[in-house]
Image (spheres, rainbow, N blue to C red):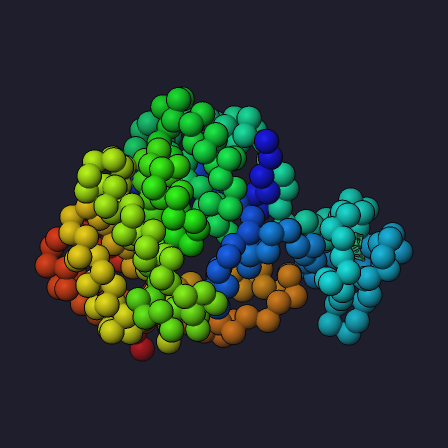
Length: 316
Ligand code: SF4
Ligand code: SF4
C-alpha cells in the first residue's frame, strides 16, 4: 500500500503533544486562501523550480518529452496543464533546481522512518501526526500505519480539516490518540468564501467525535485549532462564535489552539509559480493576538484550556 507524502517534519512541537514526527499527505478538498502548504493541495504533486539553483544549462527544455518548458524573462515557465509529471526533467537537471514535490511512501517505510525518533517520543511525550493536505484522503494507508505505530507504543494524532465522510468519525478515526480538528470560521458563508467549502459537514463531524467522546466510545483527546488569519478569521465575532460551538460540547474538548498566521511559505509559492494574495501580508501584531486569546479565554470561562501559538510581530 502506498500514499503520496509531500513533506515530513521531525522533532516538531506544533502538531500535537510533545515532540513529534509529522507526515504531510498529498491532496486537500479545501482551498483555504492563506494555505501554508500549496504544494499539498492537488491530488498530484507539482514540479517546482528554484531560480537560485538553476545554472541555465537548458537541459530540462531539451529533454522534456512534451516540450512544455520555456525560459522567459522571469525564469523557467512550466505549462502545468500539459505536464505529465514524468520526472524526466527533475532526473536530468544537474543542479536539482527542478524537483517533484511529493513521492509515494509505503507503510513499512513510514513506520521505519517514524521509529527512528522513538526515544524522543518517549522522553518528550510525543508521537506521530498525520497531516496534509488532508490525511483523511488516504484512509486505508493511515489506518494501517496508525495501527502499526501504536503496536510499537507510539501515539498517533490525526490533524484534519474535518471535511470527510461522517462514517469515518463514527468508527475508523476512533483509534487515533489525538484528533486535531480545524475549526477555522463559524459562519458558513464566510467559511465558503475563504476556504471554498461550506462548513456544515465539518460541524457535523465535530459533533460526532464529541458525542463519541462523551459516550466514552472515543477515549483519545480532541483539540480544536483555529488559524488566526488577518481579515479572514481574526475577528472578535468569529472567535466568540467558535467559543459558543466549543462551549456546547463542554469539557470533552481538551484544548483550543489559536495559531497565528505566518508568511514563511512565501518561497513555496514562488518556486511553484503561484500567485498568493498573502505574499505581502505581515505577521499579526502581538497585541491583536493577545486580545483574541483573552476574548477566547473569557468566553470559555476556563471550561477548556486556550493556547496561543505561532510567531507575532512587535507592536509599532
Ligand atoms: S515532469 Fe515531464 S512533462 Fe513535466 S516538465 Fe518535467 S519533463 Fe516535462
Ligand atoms: S536543467 Fe536544471 S539547471 Fe539546467 S536549465 Fe533546467 S532547471 Fe536550470
